[in-house]
Image 1: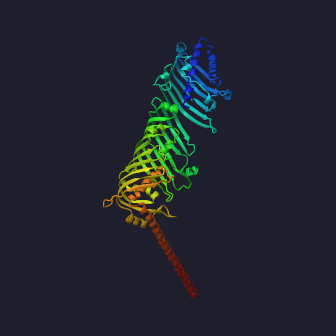
Image 2 (image 1 turned 90 degrees about the vertical axis):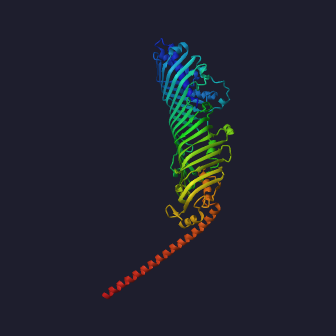
Image 3 (image 1 turned 60 degrees about the vertical axis):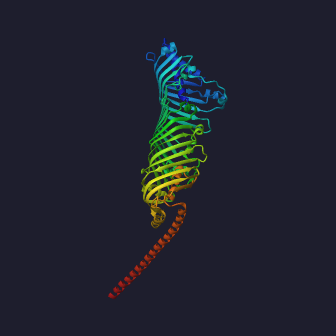
Length: 614
């Protein structure tokens, strides 16, 4: 597909060159127009071995101004000829169907073209070109020995010594690419595409000019309002504008969004599996210093810097969903990068002013907890899935600064091993001081804990992790920690406070301060086996939670004892509460009986008095 603009350019060149050549040839006669039209049609038939013919409604030339216009131009393949070429193993892999509303050529040096064989054109405007490319690969084209393809100069040199065009503008292009090379026909469509080509020179030396890109000083491509669905139909990607410039060696994507096509409930029903739901929006993405030759020749993206501006990232998962849970092994971000079809190598990826929200609905509480990262900035080095680059440097590193829960500064660093089969990576960082009650949005729904008070001074962590486990350490400095333990009670709204158990926990288990009043510091060792169905982001915070528990005096040994004690105490409390309820019910029953007996006696007394009166 990367060649089709040059196919279009070649068609324009042939038409303009031949038109002015024959126009000059028949200039002295009033018979030039019908003769010229026939010559143009014969030229296309001869040059394509009768595979294509052209049609147009009108063709106007003005030799004084050097202007020309072609209206409703069409390049049409002859299917009968094509089928004969297929039968004789001579058919091309690509078939083109082209229509153009208007083609306008400005200020052509017709006399110089005829006398000196040098064709100069100021501008070519092509309005609403509609190009369909039908691709069907034939094995005989893979085995046929062909010589070195002719250069554009070799094609025109019999007619012109030089061709120079100041600019070519193609407006509102529609491109339809139909791939029939596989059992299932695939179709890709692009609409509202603009292409501007500047300073085209074709002569004996221009292909050796290092300042030129395919004989031009620059090609700018703009795609407006592009949309595409993911193969599974669960997501839709929208781009307001795609801009590609060979002169600037950059790609710009404006207003990019990647959003689910269904609400959360319907998404899980349609997908049939549990997992993360992503909503991604980016104000602008710039890719700079692109290796153009590699990009167009080999379809690989080698570039210097990518800037991602104002991204908004929302990730949601529902642990209560009972659908099939898929394994996340091999699907962490650095592993997913290795499976991207486009080979890439970015020296640096900059993240500017991102907002990230991770939310999770808990199966036990039925509530949704969230972690919020505001004003996120940072950069990632060596973003690649290129095998040669990974041999030089197998690590991708990220350095991120953000506002955790919009309450404290957080610096976190990642080091991803791009060649480790177990998906090894490391994450480390430091969280600054903040009011610990801000953690309620996270721990209340997901850990069934309400933070009544906590003054967080600092938290540092360093974890070596993989697809299977995480191991490291955490240091948590805090004061005045007090919590309430919660539980979900059937028939009652929200989460209910376990008052007596919370009191025991605060008095006997939870440490108020770290270091304690004697200056003894409790470290937070992390040693967590990873559930294969747990996502990357969920595993990160669960690893930190594993280190937080021993830091507050709730290590695994204590947790086991406490959980056993909580069950026993809860059972006793449940029995006691049931006894109280039963006793209350018995009292109400006895009171109802007494009231009933009293009412009967009162009725009998009234009846007796009435009888005595009679």
